[in-house]
Amino acid sequence: MDHLASALPWLTLAAFASGAGALGLVSYLCRYRDQPGVDWFILAISSVAIFSITYGVGLRVFDPVVREAIGVVSWVAIVWMGIPFLAFALAYTGRGRTIRSTPFRLLLGVPALATLLVVTNPVLGLLWSDFDVVSVFGHAGAEYALEPLAYVIFIVGTLAAGLATLLLFDTVFSYGPLYRREAAAVALSAVPPGVGGFVWLFGLGPVPQFNAMAVLFLPHVALDAYAFVGNNMFDSRPATRRAAERTAIDDIDNPIVVLDESGLVVRLNAAAESLLESDDVATVGEPVADLRARFSPALCGIEVPPGRAASMIDEYPVLSAVAAFAEGSIVMRGVKELRVKESDRIAAMASGLRACGVEVEEGEDWWVVHGRGHGGVPGGATCESHLDHRVAMSFLVLGLGSEKAVAVDDGSPIATSFPVFEPLMTALGARIRREV
Image 1 (cartoon, rainbow, N blue to C red):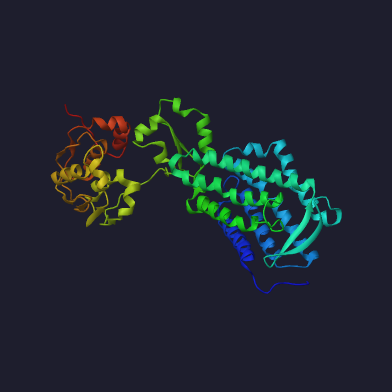
Image 2: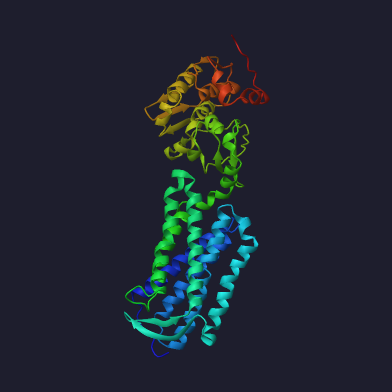
């Protein structure tokens, strides 16, 4: 080489940082290879890493022959960015059938043909000619005349990436506030390198020998990492949600909850929202599963972390009923929201538990149930439900293990929210009797 600078100025370091960030994202994505389209996403981001690193290396190489050879690798990486990213967007958003269509397979021929043209360009010159190295801020900038085919290849890839961004933005945005910031990040991620690429391609910048894409991929990778890594967007399933929307479930009177293959909620209809006392936005991403509980006489006291309150706020009433049979105290904090549910659930449960012989302490946003151990709950009281279905069901569950039967003054709300509660309790051995 005629010259290889001993220092690594900021442009080179920025390009390497982009490449390192892209490799980190690829490493993270590998754990999701069983998800739709992730292999395509890995290919696209790997291309970003290869381009950024090789371009950074090329900035330090002033020998024209070696510099052009490095440029060939960079160009191959460029042609494998846009269309694989579009394939990922199609698969991730539930349009995987399009990828298997004949037109898309023909589209995949564009980067394959472009790779052949790039590799053979030093001999055939079909994409660029008159390659030379010029100094740009102490870096090895490349100067050459682009042929029409190079413009076509670059524009096709950019349009594919733009379409992919629109698909991702539209589909993820449909999740509402849950992923709105992430959708904005996905949409914005393609802007910096896209603008940098067009400025370079058409010689619009003050230094046409320098392609700023390598540097501008740094915010691109950061925004993608924010959307897909920091907020676990691969734990959601836009494909399943899109299929649910096509079935017009909102027109069905029965409650319908659509789950993805991992058991996460992706869609509710209006009837399900009413039944679960939650809206579609708040419930998306919540896991759903069948739970199997086995009796144990060795329940012990615990302190429920306040951070759990948001995810299990509706389970505290029945937890307090179970806590009555524990050895020791169950401490529940950060539960102020229970004061403003269908009833003041802290006050309602505390009053009923005391009537059944269980000691309870309570505060504005906390309560403590002092368990009496297995078989130690006297029961025998009629508890006020305050027309709250969860309070009513919790006291009836308490009656399963108490010495004497536990009654509620009004259990009618149970039939509305959980119509199969009584037969399920009967299957567990409960004897439920209605009194007029």
